[in-house]
Structure formats: C-alpha cells, structure tokens
Length: 50
Image 1 (cartoon, rainbow, N blue to C red):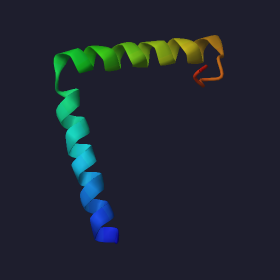
Image 2 (image 1 turned 120 degrees about the vertical axis):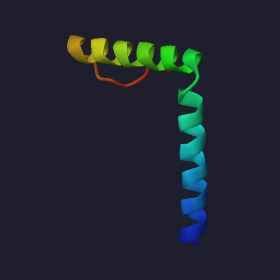
Image 3 (image 1 turned 180 degrees about the vertical axis):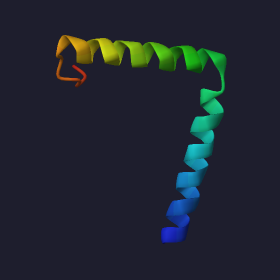
Image 4 (image 1 turned 90 degrees about the horizontal axis):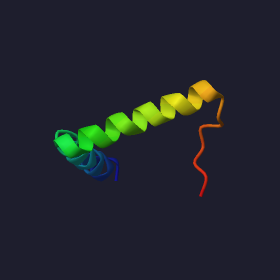
C-alpha cells in the first residue's frame, strides 16, 4: 500500500510543478503570497473566512 501511495504522491507533485510553470498560475501564486504576507503583517489570524 505504501508503494501505491508514493506513486500517487509523486504524480500529484509532478502535476503541481507542471501547473506552476504556466505564467498565469505564477501570477496567481505571487498574488496569493502577497495577500498572505499582508494579512500576517496586519496581525490577521491567517485563516480563510467562508
């Protein structure tokens, strides 16, 4: 069972890396990081409000 789990995890990681190489996703990630850092500076809880 551990071998299957490792195969799935490596497949997911490969897909994430592939998606992060796309320019539009890089812009989204940078914006997310900026927003997160601004929340941390303001003393927010860091959690998302749903």
